[in-house]
Length: 309
Image (tube, rainbow, N blue to C red; front, side, top):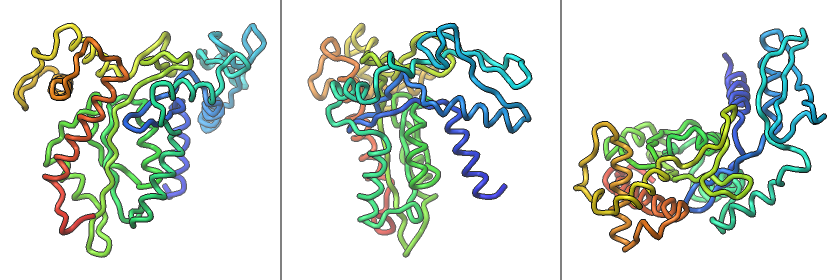
């Protein structure tokens, strides 16, 4: 397969996932949900066409092709019902992207659109000599598939990332894990170059509900970040002391989650925070501070300044 064919297939795969539009606040990755991009149905047609079948969306009983809460029947050109999927509103009843952005700004006043964010990063880093040709991107996000929209954007600038993802964005790879990624860096002019991206994430739906997210073809409401929501619930119920264990101690059946909760509890105790007073926005910000401190410590241990920028 030629490089151009691989890039085209990658682009189609990104569209076929039905990714939700995302907004990137400083200190966290906020998903704006409840929006069908309009590319999903055309992408499905493209994939069907590749199999010799073309398909179109038929209006539901209300007369709209895409309506709020009704089902849209996708029918092949042979009259066979291929699939039936629930779509979100895209007409006058749907909140505009601007209105949804305003909802995110209520919790994250410095939020940027993900494209805006990546463009600014690319321009700023290019001024210091970091480009996709001489730099490897190290990404540390939550394992949630909705976070991959951000990683996709990072990879359009820096190529394939070395990932150290964990539940809630917790770092569990250690120094050896970081060094493994660094060892994959291009070497240009005798120097390796690395860019680190590390974020927790939070869902904010089209009605402004914090923690809410819709997932393609899954009925009902979902939530993000599920791991941080669970941590917040446990810390509110049990207090901090139960999770203040020695570093390295974890539940063998829940290694990432128990380490995430322990790290958040220790940071909250250090900052004098009480779980009873914390919201999901608060614990997301706490996770960002915790992950940043952990990452900076690992970088200090793993990076050799003599051979890297």
